[in-house]
Image (tube, rainbow, N blue to C red; front, side):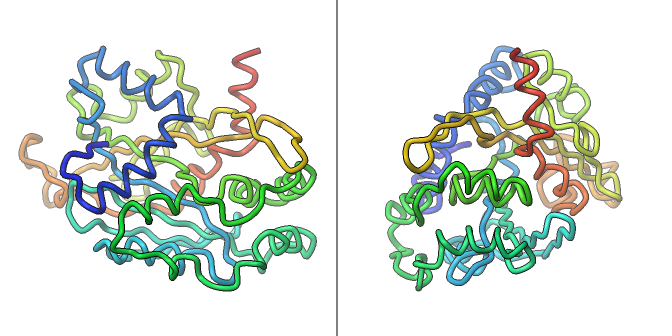
Length: 307
């Protein structure tokens, strides 16, 4: 991601991205390999398609809370998405300028979960009796940036984490990680040929040892064929729970997106293509499978590859 202008939005994005990058070895592994291959001259040349956050649908939290930050920064709320099986709602947000990433925020429909799982979530969130974003000075980018790395509730016990994971691995991830950045996304279509297609870029990723999410296939393709997405499988990270209990759990991951020209621009020369000429938005079916990058069925592939 490029942070050159030191605008309030860039200060906030940097505060969000830096801790994520520090804990995500794959980010540097991929960017270094891209430089070595000549796809980019430096990491800052990577165009970030979007970043994503996971939230809980409980009073004073969720999408309605978190979106206030981005709306204040000039983002515009766009299409809504619903994921029935995973019990999730989501929106994506268009940036104030094309050089900034889109935002994707999802929210767990907590009221649809079992009473036992709801009780665990309530135990950690019921003390939040006011929207924490309302207490922020949204004109202070340093304060807002710090908010994303500030815990809003206590670390759960390992038993409670595992109880959540049995029913919804999404809930388990959020209850431990809070508003930590879930993933950022490399714009594959912006890369030089032949690596500007998902097929070729995935081959490059696997050559450097990146394990890809295979839920729904390595390449998830929208119904119109104009949005192709892949993602790495989340690496296991050391997690410390209440009472000092420890276990390796799924961390964050990296996504990759290829946006193709809209039909009316398909004959436009590639060097003339701009963001407004390409397929916009997201696809529920694609996103549904991307969520599983932190799920046990996918994460186990990394464990097996290391054994």
